[in-house]
Image (cartoon, rainbow, N blue to C red; front, side):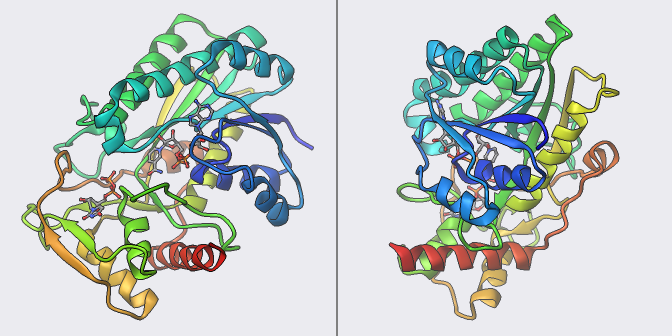
Length: 342
Ligand code: NAD
Ligand code: UDP
């Protein structure tokens, strides 16, 4: 067994896939999650897939007392991967304080508890949303960050500023912040995947739910953008590729020869697909036409986002290996399995 790693938000979509990768590489995993957007049954599925049941503590990281107590119990951990956050853009516009409170207090409490317990490495879940509406493609990590359209996006920008100030202030704790582009897909077992509560905000779960008959039709938010077919372009990345990138980032942080206090990496494939291309690719996978309609633009959407992947490749020795067909097929298999279970 290798080092003990604390994974906050480890019951969620990206966290659960990362926990599987960590267990498969013999790390001892402790999940901290308040189950506000996940289900404890994920532990059974992780155990079924890996043969190991991760240790689980139900804890709300907004509470500094609860965070301190649980970190004290696990002060032998070597690193933290901090996924815990609320992530629904529309909800954050309705309820900004809930987002600033949850996403920023959780981060601050985690950093303080790490400091107090000598746990000196952190991987943070950031987002490409910190780039706002960038002027050049592909987006490199040195592109300026911008105030986000949504309070959710802004929590990521502020969190990165907190991490910068924090790592500047002392030399003990080193941090890698990973800016995810558009995570989709599911584990190859078909046992775990994204399970949005309520109406999905994101394109992929909206597509699969429409095909499964849960939603009547997909609304395509605008076809008058300055792109090849008028619909916005995004860099979709397989969640298992993301999980692999967390492993590489962890290995880098734990390598005694690493000396950088704070590093930032894009996690994308470097390829952009439009909404209409995603629909066509889905139709090819499912073998059936998807019911969709072009409607108004969604406020805050930008025309085009895709990552420069050079830095992650050079420094982390990581690049995405799973293509669009595999991403979509795994999302669709997961959706169908889910509907059979419900
Ligand atoms: P998710 O909602 O599936 O997982 C987040 C987990 O954190 C959930 O299990 C939830 O119960 C838990 N959580 C939330 N607040 C908590 C708190 N106060 N204390 C303890 N646990 C708490 O989300 P995800 O898609 O897996 O995203 C993981 C991280 O990646 C988040 O920080 C998110 O902002 C970031 N991110 C996600 C995407 C995406 O499209 N999914 C894109 C960019 C960044
Ligand atoms: N999108 C859409 N209909 C939906 C959801 C999303 O047309 O029901 C579009 C959206 O306008 C964007 C792309 O799909 O161009 C990806 O949206 P998502 O919310 O998944 O990711 P993000 O906006 O964070 O890039």
